[in-house]
Image 1: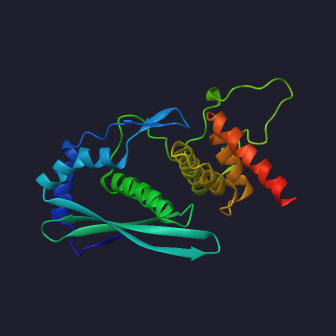
Image 2: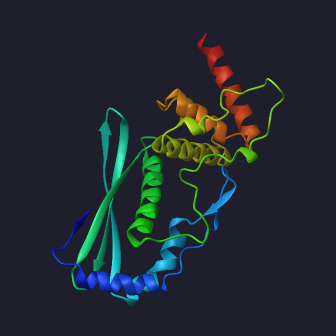
Image 3: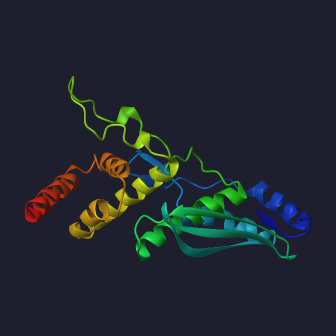
Length: 228
């Protein structure tokens, strides 16, 4: 964290703002965990007036995409400022699941939301588990005795970072199918340098979307036939 030499005025103003901020509503549905969460817009609506009334403002600055041995990541600096010129700032980063504008935008949006909530200690009306919660075993249909799928429990084997990657990719795949772009959906799953563990996690998340999984399986089988 970085900060100005003094933050006494900022601290006083933030204390007053937090006394009136009730929290953000969980209005968006998470299709994977059958839960609700607060999106970026909802978070902003819940705090904007309270910040400006107390001379506070926030700016969020995306960094460059960095390429490392672990893959591509993008950072975001969030700066909380007071009208006196005092400030505090913090930086966070996330993996970019695919190297295009959509992949960067998804990571930045998620970073903006969690960074905004973190710097203001903003809470949702209910426990927010859209980012890293494990799949509720009660939502997974039991198979017959002795039957087991390789994807069962795949998400539980992923790290928090990998968990987020899998969820973002699954959402992108659903979006591609809804936009009548099945080839792009296939490429997201099979041609984006994903580890086998993350692929299995994505496949598990797509369980409620059986028609999409069937189409992806068919495309993979057709692709294998063509290659041979």
